[in-house]
Image (cartoon, rainbow, N blue to C red; front, side, top):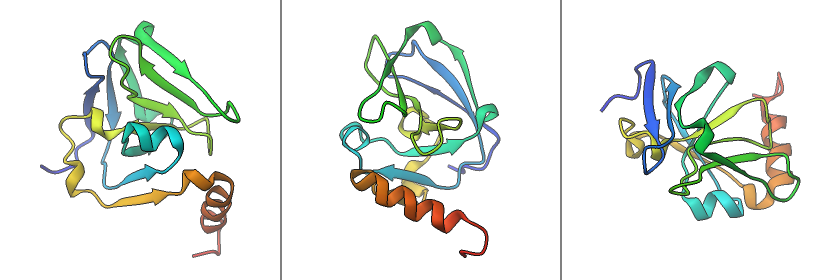
Length: 134
C-alpha cells in the first residue's frame, strides 16, 4: 500500500482518540529509549500543522520522565501512545505509525535514534543537521 498520500487517519486501540497525520510518509524512526522501546513505537515526525486531533482530546493523558521535556500522550482508556512531543524539539510532533492502519510500516525504511544514549545521539543528529555537515 503506498504511503505517499496527503492524510492518514489513526486511532488509539479503543478508538477514543482519533487523529489525522499529514503525509507523505516515506520513513520511520525507532527510538531505543526506555519508553519507546517498551511501547514498540515507530515514529513519524511532523510540524504543528501535520497533526490534527479529530476527537478524544479529553481522553488523552500525559506521561513525562527524566528531563520532563518530552510529552508522551496516551489514551486513558486503552493506554496506547498515539503521539508525542519529542525532547529533541518539543514544538514538533512524532506520530506512532503503529496507530495508523493505512500505513504499510513494513515497507518503510527505519532509522534508529539511540535514545538509550540520548545526549550523545542528540548531539550527533544535530551536528549532522547543521549546514555543511552533509
